[in-house]
Every structure is written in C-alpha cells, then in structure tokens.
Length: 192
Image 1: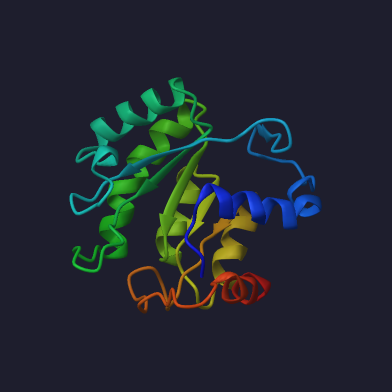
Image 2: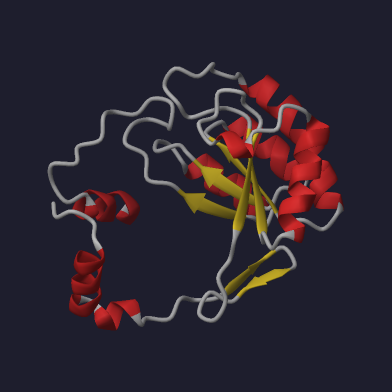
C-alpha cells in the first residue's frame, strides 16, 4: 500500500472524481437535520474511562462529563459521543451494569438540554438503557449479531454508526493487517 501523502490523495481524488462529487442522502436524527452536502457535522467525544488513549476527552465524573458536553456543544459539536470503556487492549473491562450506571445520568442531563447524544458500546443492555434515557445514536463497536442493536435503535427512532471492527467487538480484535489495501475488506464488511 502506498504511503498516505498529499500526492497520493490527489491521485486518488483524480481517479475517483465522480464518486467524490456524489451527493449524500441527508437526514435528521431527533430534531437535528444533517445537511452533509453543504455543512460538516462535528462529533465531540467524552470518555469516562481513565484508561482512554484520547486524554483530552477523559471526564472522570458525571459532573465533569456534563460540563464538557455543554462546552463541546457551545464550541460547535453537533453530536456528543459518550463511552464508558476504553478500547485499548490493556484497559479494564467494564461490565454492562457499571457502563449503564456511568452513562445514564450524563445521557439524561445532556438530552434534557437538547443535546444530541451518541453512546459507544457493544453491549445490547447498555444500548437499550441509554436509548431509554434519551440517547439518539449508537456508535456500534460490535461486529457480530448486530440485528438486536438495529432493532433497539429502530424502536427508539434512533441512528447507528457502524464502525469497522476486526473481531467480535472492539475489545476482542485481531491485529490489523496493513500489508494489503484494506478497502476490499471494509467493502465486504459493510456490505454484510
């Protein structure tokens, strides 16, 4: 695979100019309209795990997370994404009850302020509890048996961000193989 450089990106754009100009179907989530063809959407991230690699996103209390969510929204975030468990291999595993206990007060508070909330999880029980509390988006980090997640989101008129995961879920991934172009693998993955 070639090195990612401006020259490579320019060549990629030139080879795929028609696809790059394709219009994306616009939609709304909750009361927020997303106009992807004319306006970018920004996601602010809050991680509740002290093990998170994205240090600037870590909030270790509900109060700090709620405050950060409001600040990120004021700064222009369209969606606030909450995660209770780090995806790093060495990070502590957080059971679904603890995840829900951490996430629900924050989801309720931010949703009550009219903030569009996403939750990152691979646990159906956490997904259901967070949608019941007001979340509108699931940042899905599971790669198996996802029908249950889709049904939960649909029952709450919610949306799902489907992440590319090599393994059962983000905590049980295989080593990525970067020796070949991953686009074919990703195409097959999302086609499922």
